[in-house]
Length: 145
Image (cartoon, rainbow, N blue to C red; front, side):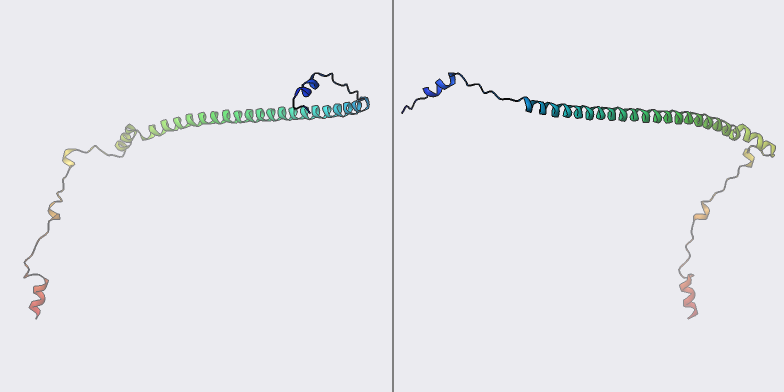
């Protein structure tokens, strides 16, 4: 017995045996299965692509509709702003001081003069008086007894 690995090394260099296998029947069966499987994969791929294109078109349509709505709302805002400005000018015209002055003169009103000004002193009324304790309510009760 040899405890050497040289025998194994020679086997590596030895010519290999050729195996002949007939695959003609099996090859035909696998080709038809492979071709039908390939057709199915292609059909599924086409359907997926068509669905993605349809989804993209739907998104673009919704975006377009939303943009149209935004544009219309912006136009409405501009119309309302101009109407607001017009109404503010009309209100200021009705409430202006010259109009108020004219209306006051028509009613017979005049501007206040210095002679019409009167001053009232309210400080004297805030004072309080202290009476003698003998004249208070306690003294009156004592007098009764």
